[in-house]
Length: 273
Image (cartoon, rainbow, N blue to C red):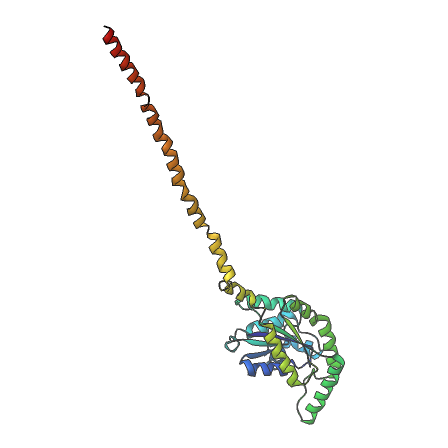
């Protein structure tokens, strides 16, 4: 099972991803977590992404695509995965399609968690206050002003993904402003309703053997029985042609009576003699 969760920052994608991990036993692949880990480790990709993340900007596509391509190769992702925070742009989505196609895989569903941006900002502000009260370290992007920039970036660059996946028949949209339990239930219904239709191109091809209508078509197209039926009368036609051939000699035999008349004339001549 391979799922994408779409939605602006703070929409609750991470929370819902954890629910799906617990329910389906698949792994959550959060590009945000992967990028932050790369930044903390000081890797070349992390250093390249660090400045973008601090400014609330999207990380370049080639960097994110490289991280995701390497991550889904790992053993724990073989059974399936949930992509949280990726793809963020249509070019990233197209790159993901190519990556999966090379592996003979396809997405099962894309779930959009839709929220009100204004309420979302207030929600993030509340979350930051709670983290401070608990003494938890804040992330650089846990900032209302940075969040507004990220929301603007989502609307201009990521929102087109909604149209991209809707065009593929893979998108399911749910209300992310509902309580978490209700959102989880809605996600479950969305996945059931999707019936993994992005993969159906495969199921249709393999299932093409199952439908009786498709199986019956070859039988009708065989056309061997009508050929035999046409071949059957041929001997009778040929036989009919042979009868006139036999009749010709019989007509030739009828010429003998002429010879019979000649013998009678010969007898008459003998008598006169």
